[in-house]
Length: 350
Image (cartoon, rainbow, N blue to C red; front, side, top):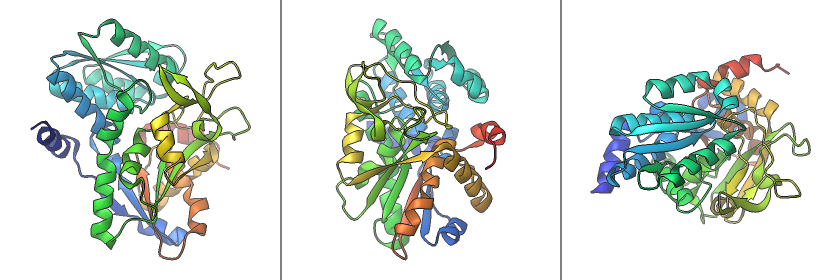
């Protein structure tokens, strides 16, 4: 069956399931039991492959031979290029020139994997718009492979469903390790695929606190952040109702975050409902806090988390003192941080 084919590919090609790792030194540091869902160990170094491979398989079954996608930090682009190489599909990735300059290694990887990387102006929003424009002009030939839980239906639903394998594994692993659900699950929120992936399995379970951590950049009042849920308003993005960072006239504002994959102008209404209504919280973390967390996790656990995921790790500083003794906290490490080493080395140490 299709589900069996996908399950086999996720296991044998992507390397699922990923571990739920007990972080002993972070546990000692915070006086709370810290577990890390290691999506950084998946093929290509991030959770993006869960969705990219599944959708590439759909494109193949539809008889299409070409895939277009947009990427910010490059992780979705690398995952899409890998999946297309595996399945024999041509691949074009749109990426802003600014992001290409920040992430040259991922551009090189996409090229090595056979993808054509097309630069665009602006940021991820512009790259995404260009990929949708190309797809809309060639609907019978090209498949648009969405990596973010934003945009027209059914893209957000597909991304959520294919990423929800993270949450299903996490619930099962928690039951095996300590016999119940965690007290809290923390994930960074950009455009939503990582947070939805781990949260969806726990939505409606009032015993589990779900915390989405957004990039506050230089502060929510600075005008330089990517906290779409905390500071955004309802608007329309690629034809879909979303929470947006926008000005008084409805023009989308360029977001900012130290993590290249974090800045998102939009959060889909579906994710906003899960994160803000279904017993969940959203919390802001500033650049400096995320950078400190990156270094802390590296030195205490020997793990380099992506700067995006470092926002989630940073929130432990505020969360752990409020939790009861013996609390079990799971952090989603959405990707690995080797891509961010230059940014980290160039960032001033406070």
